[in-house]
Image (tube, rainbow, N blue to C red; front, side, top):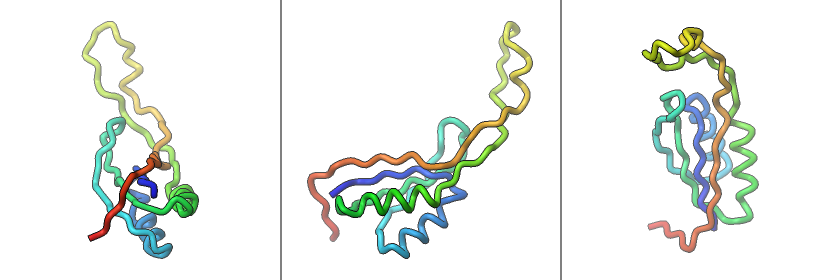
Length: 109
């Protein structure tokens, strides 16, 4: 058995959840917040048999899309800093961060 933790953007979470249901993959869905953009994320917790891990990873990879987004860096009140940092910059967001961990036991009550 493996424990899969998948962190995706909220924009991708509903489609990913539907894909898991269609593939008969049980997942627990948690609302989380990212540290970089302070934007909403969704974390899926999945207990799955070893042989189904590639299937789970394929579903996540095909569903969680990367995209470009503009963000404004935090204002720095330091007088020596470069004032050009006040302008929005384009960053790549989305996709998925996935952790696959071995588990000793898995129980469903």
